[in-house]
Amino acid sequence: MYCFGIVQKTFGAQGELIVQLHAETEAIAIKEPVFVVMDGLPVPFYFKSFELRGNHRAHVVFDDMESQKLAEELVGKTLWLPGPEKATAARQPDFTGYAVHDRQHGALGTVSGFLDIPGNPCLQIAYENRELLIPFNEAIVVQVNIKKQLLETLLPEGLLEL
Image (cartoon, rainbow, N blue to C red; front, side, top):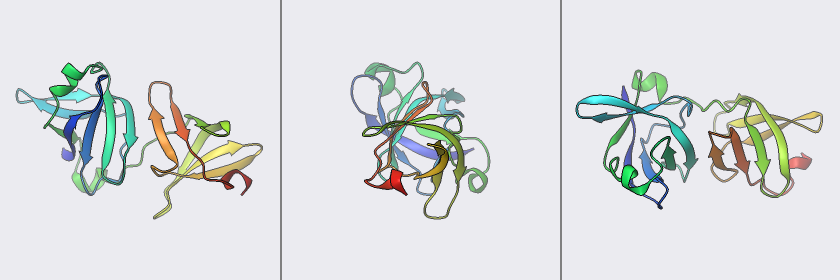
């Protein structure tokens, strides 16, 4: 197992946490659990939501941890992912099948693939009988809802016309 991040503090009253991500972690497969060692045993936690905030921070909520009191138990804990560090540190999330909704333009379509372009990873979406590539970064993909399998975007002006 390798260190994915450390829970810094709670954020809000609904179990939100701020996680400082490991510097080498670009993204993770959010459908997989992260582990927290409690009483000497690794306990799996599944993401309810995962939202990147800058390069090395995320706001997260775990399933069944949706209160501030429960979330406080995780403050200061290290989050772990299985596998060797170098093999898993660069995993990209698998959003295939997720719906994409833009805050200005409404429903865009469904993610059909992911292009791991160095420096500019992109989501592939079938949009109006053509393929649309949306850069996968925190300025454009502003919220991820795992339960609803929904990505919320804020597209820059003109991206839909390309």
